[in-house]
Length: 231
Image 1: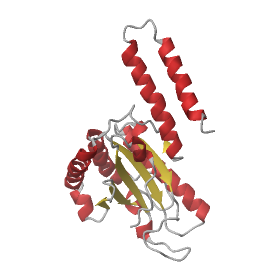
Image 2 (image 1 turned 180 degrees about the vertical axis):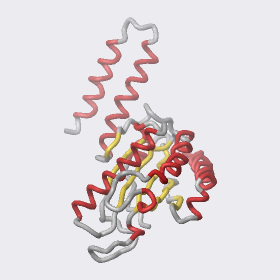
Image 3 (image 1 turned 135 degrees about the vertical axis):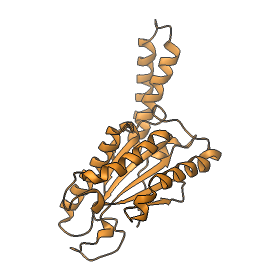
Image 4 (image 1 turned 180 degrees about the horizontal axis):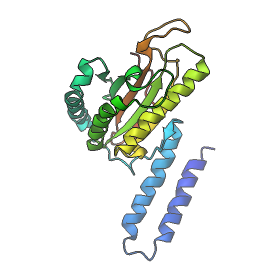
């Protein structure tokens, strides 16, 4: 099985190059095609979350020494544009140890209870986020849904998946390339506040948007699902 992916890449690369023999722009097109193939294989190997993992072909990479400044600038812009929402305790922006940014949004602000349809009043907030994400295209966007422990675990898992999908779809409709977006639901498995079963704890009902930088030489790490994010 270890030989499968390199063989697949080689076969597809040969096919791409062969099809372009008579094309005057063959070299540029072949290079782009190879990047897409390699990126797709790498991306699919690191996560089963919903989305289109294409490394390198979709977003550029940041040189290691420039990652901090790139994410600093993005964080400042997010904080400026979302200051009102943060003041109203509707969201929180946190810098993670790997230079990723987490935008934690309260699900109660975004969704009605038991629903995965974005509330009309939440669309402006997600629109602001989308506008900034479009300007910082060297990141992979992980949308992770969470629930409290009320209701069955199966219901909560499905609800978290559907809420993440709603947020990811809206970001895409707002102009963020879907190929940068990964969506997953974690149900009640990662509580921000530990509770017993069947407890309606609002702080556990949340959607996290995690922005992972694509770092030159370690691009595939950006597609790896974020670890437990806590509160």
